[in-house]
Image (cartoon, rainbow, N blue to C red; front, side, top):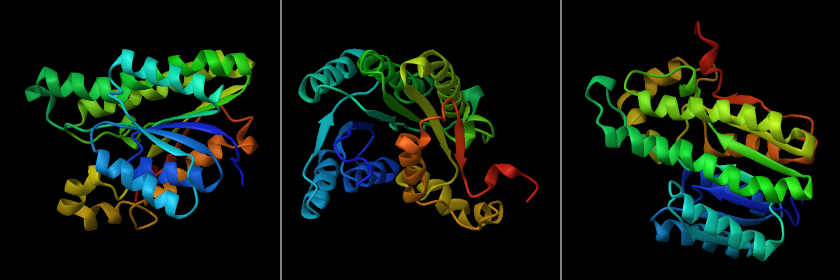
Length: 251
């Protein structure tokens, strides 16, 4: 299996894209610690499904990813337990859409804290172990909204744009130590987060996508696995749009 013995952290791993990422790594032989915020039932379901398939090196960890101390404590515990961190996938994220003119500070700060600050905290926490072992893969989850936002997405677009800048800067700093840093930017994907938009305008959205379908979580997780693989060892600082051609325009 491609990731046999690799030690992987995935944030936001209990549902949607994150769950698919966890399952994909597990089925390729990795040992995965995934982070969830509050839905313990969903987290345990991931573990149960994988255990039934014979993959039992999967653990769930409750953590508020916007809290530095909780992030540092978790990563320190995993480094002590595993001795190394091979792959980090920053997937945790929320949306609180609203027009900028009426957006309150909580809607802004909670999205920035969860989507962007958490990436900084986890990246910083794994940097020393990865630099010491002179190897590592970091994959951050951005969005096509970073460059092509819809109205009402000021907080979300800002957080995802920040992730792209952070990804590129980290890549320049860590490449000489054998650590690659890349980002995946999904388009419209069939998840709980996009349910409201899909219910309101799914048929119209599909008309804007050259592939004429919405993405599935598996479409995104396979891109993540590529960036995490040995085959991507000479790829760093890249933002890969996985959007069915949505951002090509002119469709």
